[in-house]
Each structure stands twice: as C-alpha cells, then as structure tokens.
Image 1 (cartoon, rainbow, N blue to C red):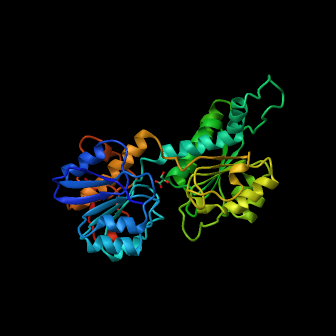
Image 2: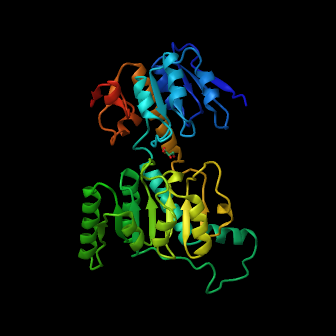
Length: 381
Ligand code: DGY
C-alpha cells in the first residue's frame, strides 16, 4: 500500500511527520508557529512500521503517531538516526509505545491526558445503558418493521438506579465514570484500585450526606482489596486500568464466572484487558449477562462469535470521539512536539493541561511521560 501525504507549511525549517490527519486547524497553527513543515498521512489504512520508517527517511525532527502503530526499537532507532527529538502519541494511553526504548535514544514521548476524561467516561455510560436497556436490539427490531404494538414483556432490561456500580481502575477516567453513575443514578460504588482514591471516596460520601439531608437513602462507597470482590457485588462493572502485563486478560473465564448472571461488563480501556474468547463463551452461556465494548483484543478484528451475540454492544474504539476532545488531543500532541523542538520544558502538572487549549498557552510541552528520564526540565508557568 502506498500512502498519500500532504504538506502543510512547506517552508518550515523543521520536518514533522504526522502519520494521520487530525481534527481541527489549531494543531497545524501551533506547529507552523514553531517553524515546522508538517507532512501528513491522508490514508485511513493503518501504516506499517516499514512505511513509517520510509517516511521518517534521513531527516525528521519529530513525529505525531497513532495508538495503532508499534513504536519500539525499529521506529525509535530510525527516528534517532534521522535526528528526531520528539515523539507524540495521539492518545492518552501509550501501551503501543516502548517508552524504555525511546528513553534509551533520548527521545521524549508525549501523550494527551485530560481532554479525554469526561468524553471517554460518557461513552462508558452510553454503553452501560445501551446494554442495560437493549437499545441496539430494539433499534434493529424497529428498523426491521417488526413492531406491531406495545407489549408487557418487549425487550425487558435492567434498572440501574440504586444498584451497585463497580469500577476497576479508579484513575482519571474511572473516577469520572464512577461520579456520573453515582450522581446520576444514585448507585453505590464498589471499586478496586491498588491505591485508595481519597478524592472519589470523599466525593461519594459528601453526595451521600446530601441525599440524606434530602430525606433519601445515602449512597455508599467501598474500596475492595481484590477485583473479585468488586465483580461479586456489582450490577455493572466498568474496566479502566492501564494495559500492562498485570492487566492482560484481567477478565478471564474465572473472573467472569464470579459476576452476577445478569451483570453488565463495560470496557473502554484496552481490548486485551478482557480474554475475548472467554467473554464470547460467557455471553453465550449466560443470556442475561451483557457487555458493552469500545475496544477489542485484536483490533480491528473481533474474536469469532462476538458480533453474533445479541447481549453485546460493540462500537469501534470511539470513546474519545467528540469534536472537542479529538481537537484537544491534536493540540496537545502538536504542542508536545512543538514544545520540545522549541527547547521548552515539560509542563509539570499533567492533570491540568487545559491551559494549552486557551489563547495564551504556556511555553511548555504539555505532557511528556519520560521527561525526567530524558532530562527535559519541569516547567510550571
Ligand atoms: C486513548 O487516547 O488512549 C484512547 O483510547 C483513544 O480514544
């Protein structure tokens, strides 16, 4: 396959490759202001390592790459040989990047935190209710013109209000999802995270006190020591861990087996967190069980049988796909490359990158995950 490329700001003195075109214009303005010529891949096909290496060529100052590309030894060696000084992943997750290898070559690696949090949590909520209320099945029924009149037992689903929501991985996105479900539907929260999340616990407790002050039952929060305990007590479980060796196939046959028969499993993190073959079997043998998936083990493929299951809702890794978020991610990715190529430091607070979306962005690279290791100084404004 040969990819088409288009060039923005031909006369820029630094050469930046963006393997895919990104939403909005602001990211290009940022790179132009940093005197970069930007070569942009226009194909919707996923590029191979070979194709990216060829594009990096003999001289390349920085790359904005995608979560679908394997950024390891081959690509970082080739970027280094081409004089590359920065790599920005157009994603908050960077399990596709071997940060150790990038660090070995002294290349700073950027990601895009902060702008995906609510957007991704909203998709997890959408999947929860699409699965709970069988929205996709019912939609297909209408389109097939099978609806002949209201019936007492047509598409009975699960009520979520006042049930228990489970969250595995209470980082930024897990916390946002938990708050939406607790506040919106007065659900008790059960969570597992290696570290206690005091902010979230206090938030739920304060909301519980508010409900009590209104004469309502308070909501409760419990941090469990094991994933299994969360699975046992929850009516819906949403997965929000990072993907690494400890979370690969976190949801396997045994763990699926401890969930309630009519529970709902949501995954908008990374596909391999679930053993998808085991999930297919579980959904077949437990027709009341439901799943909502944004991500898949062998993306873009699905394991055999998954797409035929009526109790599974599947969408193509679009949890962060809103205009605002994808443009924000583009701004952060461009600012990471532009910031490093301009000799700026790394923004110290990766939990607060929103100033980079404003009119007077800080003179820094917003989110460099290996800043300490490659010696990029911290900058806090
Ligand atoms: C990310 O940024 O890690 C997401 O998966 C993209 O939506």
